[in-house]
Image (cartoon, rainbow, N blue to C red; front, side, top):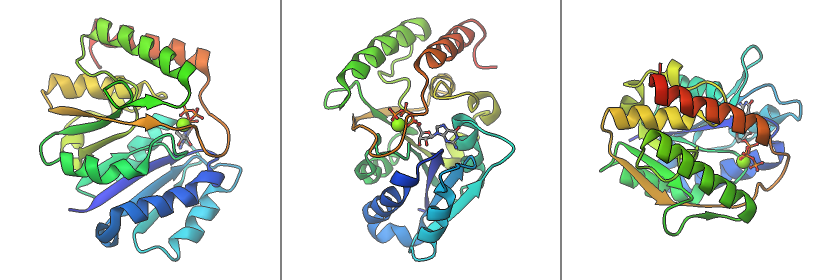
Length: 235
Ligand SMILES: Nc1nc2c(ncn2[C@@H]2O[C@H](COP(=O)(O)OP(=O)(O)OP(=O)(O)O)[C@@H](O)[C@H]2O)c(=O)[nH]1
Ligand SMILES: [Mg+2]
């Protein structure tokens, strides 16, 4: 099975090379037929340059796309999905919040599940940033109560899915905005009765660079997303 790892990047020059090397290492023998799809929104720090440099010597294929007309996390993921050639897709952050060591386990679990997500809120999961852990935990309780979803971590952003399963969903209605796309993804997956597995994951702090998350803006857009899905479904 060919694996595509989709990496949305904005100003991740300090992390991306180390992450590419870590992904290549965990893929082991599978790396020769696997690929990484980097979708960069024209980062001024030259993220794409170091990716292209890495691609020259890597065994796994590295696609490096630089977008100049569209931007944003969720639309970058959609772009990556559309360009990915793998049968199995992994989506993750590029700052080491999401541990690449989980990839083989997530891939194996796709044998039995339709969607495998890295979860901070099942036993064994967590976050190095304990203040943010509790904010996220309480916010997730709110999301679960409103949408009656069974999943504990509705804003994970680290997931594995078969390409064919993801393409069955309406990508345009899911992948817009920022991290709240994950709520829409879970909602649509649950409506189609996809078997979802949460694997415990411990978020470490980003290794280099700055956060792109703006707390208040996120709170507003995520909450709008929850009410919209609750009232109208995912249209
Ligand atoms: N292509 C693209 N990627 C983005 C954009 N905004 C964020 N990202 C990437 O999305 C991922 C998550 O962004 P982060 O800034 O790490 O957000 P966060 O995890 O909430 O914040 P941290 O505490 O810094 O980890 C990272 O890989 C970013 O590089 C964007 O506008 N376009
Ligand atoms: Mg991050």
